[in-house]
Amino acid sequence: MNSIPKTFRPLLLASVIAATLAGCGESSDSSAGANYGDQQTVKPTPPPSSDFNETNLLANLTDNVITPTYQAFTALTAAQQQAIDGYCQAPSADTLALAQDSWKAAMAKWQQIEVMQIGPLTDNSSTLRNNIYSWPVTSSCGVDQDLMYFDQGSINSKPYDITGRTATRRGLDAIEYLLFNSNTEHSCSSPKDILTSWAQKDNDERLALRCSFALEVASDLNNNANSLVDKWTGANGYAMTLKQAGQANSALANAHDGVNVISDSLFYVDKMVKDEKLATPLGFFSNDCGGVGSVCPQNVESPYSDNAINNLINNLIGFKVLFNGEGSDTANTLGFDDFLVEVDDSATATKILNDTDAAIADLQNYSTTLAQSIEQDSQVAEQTHAKVKQISDQLKTDFINSLALKLPQTSAGDND
Image (cartoon, rainbow, N blue to C red; front, side, top):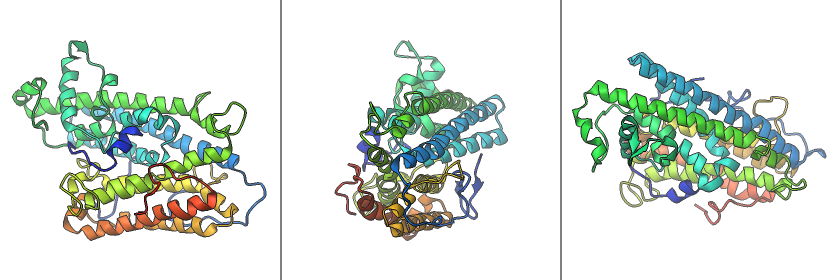
């Protein structure tokens, strides 16, 4: 968790509980709204309709997909806080497992939100997003140090306040390290004086300190999740900005600009799923193990929980529901696929949805963790990368061209 992948690092800083996968060391929460489940491909595609408009598309994606997903995550962070508190109050293998499961459930929903980074999650160089989840920029040493500052109650002669700490010491990645790391030694190669007393503490004391700080981080995470919902659904929230695109005094000149804002978030599949989560540890880009050509299992996401495959599956689930508009309201499913049908390009809608299902199925068939797969037989992960690339290639060509949308800056000129 100390390692910081080199590729796209500036991009990120600038910008209930699942069943275990059959035969796989990682679990998957495949819940993505009432309609997701059976890997069905494309919903019926009627001929273009005269009543289609982009304002209705924005309303459905905002109200029936994005808002319920943000709200569900907030509820899961509250449940996680309670589960961690239960573990701290009565430490045992069972209460630890419940706390870990609560993290997996919250992380599954967050990974769907990763493909819905819009408005408040992109404001101020993505500060709120990074405070919730800073990966791939992480620091286990920073978490170790802050654990001791929190226990001490002060830092630099001022009361400890987690809200003033850097993103790498907070959020879901910090909680993962605190709950799943079985090695109770600190991870700092050059520890600060605050860690001097760590060696004198026995294992139970160390675990208790980790749990106590995990509860503090979980409380901060729940506050940030609530802040996200407030900034999204409030009277002047970004959801309203999208739904009122083109109206007087709107920050968006027209509905098409609003659609472009949402379409930009879909490209997380390109830059993060394809490139950062797969290509970087596979050695397609330079990584912490060397230059191009060096596989690097330690650059895989969620290394302590072995949750990388689950994360990828939920990224694709989030992508699919945002693309096809099939969220909480089963009677209203207006999505980008319908927009493509409207402009007489149902073939692109079909291909993107079929390719997404194929990539999800591919990930569900893993019999090892992603890190093990990359280390033992990288061809398996390379095939997953190729399947995800089929999705992103369509996004960067036919999808953008047919809907007259603009490529996000992060994908412009990227033809890999």
